[in-house]
Image 1: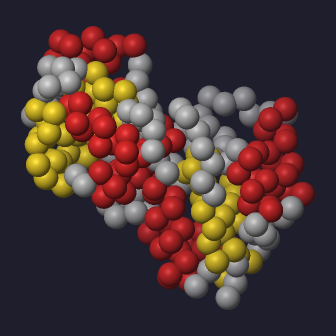
Image 2 (image 1 turned 90 degrees about the vertical axis):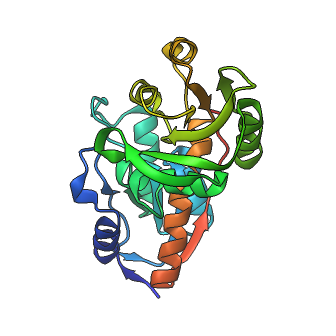
Length: 250
């Protein structure tokens, strides 16, 4: 049964505690379409491919983690941005996007869902706005075995930096492009830090700090939050929800 778009936006905003976050892009409705919502398509990023897939499956709303209008972004609606927004407007398709609030939610968030996927036990939080999580493996394993386990669970090879024989028990993680969190995490009582991407400096910091580093893919580590949110909305509101699994090797 359809619900009003504003009612849905209000519900998600409260569920994810959007108001408490200082973010790099607006959270909530980014492009206005149909006033009623009956079929939501979920995807990691509001790419042209995701928009096309949402249109093809008959959705009236596209719900993503990575939307538009990022801080410092060119504000003009030209080229690829014109293409994307033009498709949304032409098909009266709503775009809802939730960035940091969807990373941080204790049950539906990317970090919580990654822990569930990898079998990590959460023991605490760290980092800016408490986005990062601390935890433990149920059974210690070597860095090589852990990186192989992550690769199998996320369906893509993980980059591991450190001694492959190093025993890993305590870990910290933050999905996506959270390599800057490694500086703080390397000073904590952990054996390994897990995120999506790697920058040049992390190789040296891993060598010098003795804390291993795993980059498991930005897209790969952030596939599960928006999917969990979509499943929650399908149950809570009896909406049709279609998850769009669009591969991205980064």
